[in-house]
Image 1 (tube, rainbow, N blue to C red):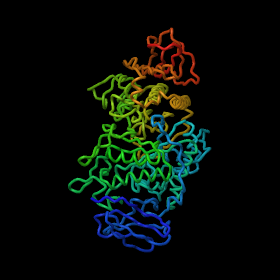
Image 2: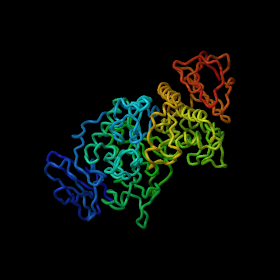
Image 3: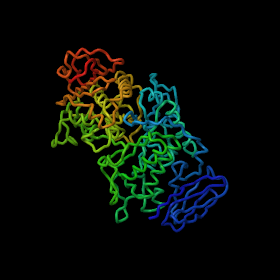
Image 4: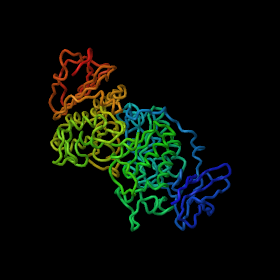
Length: 622
């Protein structure tokens, strides 16, 4: 199969527009403009091209390939619902993108995952542009109860990166329909045109340029607040493979197919893309480079990354390094996909083959809160001293010891090159929120809200004290609930909309979250990524039952740290690890961060809490 290396799509030049499409098996290709149809000429690498003189910016176009009519898969602008591509000179329209200074250490990232509509659609959040890119860019917004909302709220948390659920053109929402509160909803994991912003998030879906300007405005607004922006990308499948432009342009090439011509479906979405094919690999690389360069994006989260292959992900890393090596790449490294022979799946077993690409740490998640897929299954913070995959009764392991490994970047549990390849998380957009999970955990069904809050906060404390990339689901800091809905991808706004006023119910938890983020970002030992340094400085003191204690040598300007995690509902005396003759100060205790640290009087670790101490004076063995 030929591999084409030249330009693709509609390129605006000084004298006109050049249209190029790669369709090596086609016999006839034409571009359909608003006023006429023009045939394309076939080139040596399977590309079809034509240069049409004159000004065509803003003009709708499509392609016809052997009688199949389709939008341009490489389109940068489109009409509502992606029915037609639109010619645009994006550089001229938007100008240079803003970039923040490079982010050299991914282990220092605190990512806040959010959905544009969730954060902006609620009637009482004070945001004017409801459900829109511009709504999230607004400043000075307040809720009906006077709480900061939108970008003001996110910036107040101290996180480093805002990760947006899909913002490219997706097919599950009618951009021309009712977009008001409660009308229609979807997370957006239904790609159609990968390089066009989603029109339902634009103030005018019928204006093909509005979505470009307004998404750029959102990124610029985030950058102005010191917030970097990560884009959730879904190159592993499309909304409908049979009607997708990639398939219509060159059938059977961009997707993995069975011998009978049907689509493989490891994604459970009807199809899976074939990243090992050179032109699909090129498509993915070109796409992330376009978003990074045009909109100044600071990272990419690859949905179902295990569907892709190692060579593709490394090609993505290499291409983004040329723009900024500090651009983050993380992904779901689940084992899945029908890869062609010779292709190495980009899953967590291949972490050592993909430097500086992070993967979600599901062992961390499940040890902390219990099985992600079994609501009743308890985890460490809900009183379970053992861990077994999927909460089975077989192959149980001490949870505290597994947690110690997971908190230090999983040097034993994963085949990674550094702790920065671990994305440590307790909840994400899919599956139960932590609050709803704890509410449904066996033995906690009737627990009072204060107990649930302490267990929830302990889980967040563990996460913020862990090595790796910290990943927080929007609302985790407020004990977000989705009313027990496990998969809210198309649930109504009444379930998904962000409740800023919940800060009034859990003010202590919100403030503690901010303090933990600040503590994490202040002290380098918390975000250490080098496995050799972690091994040389971090030593296990105790891991028994619901107790975990470890030491970090030289953590506080040369003085040791002692971290103690008590997942029991009674106080824990750690006197044998802290001899009375030694001087100690406390940084974190009983859901508070002390700045500066305070003297510590050897009191026990409070129930369901984390303690961080600094040893003062002469150093020795604990």
